[in-house]
Image (cartoon, rainbow, N blue to C red):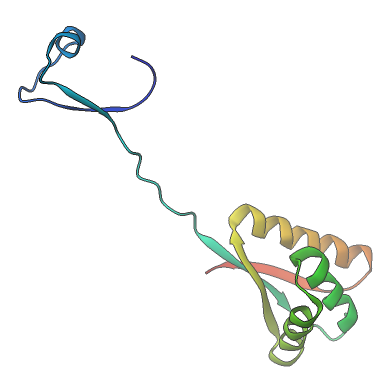
Length: 119
């Protein structure tokens, strides 16, 4: 047999390889793995008093692929409410986007802070 998982249905409880080969009443079918969706994480920008609004809009367009209108709406939410959700992603993608924002903010000497939380 190859490395696939099989579910064996038979009336008796004990089987050997020869039982499988010789018993015509034996049913062998692929066992279906139980898959679970990975948890998702929200990426959140936090407001500060120093990062220019235009820079935040540019980050939202470049890193999160938001169009200008949506990016502006998220930036205004960050500005007025203190934080805004940039998107929801799997852990690895969210972590990468947080790192990209941090890198760009540092490169342009802005204190913009980005974090993630499980949604």
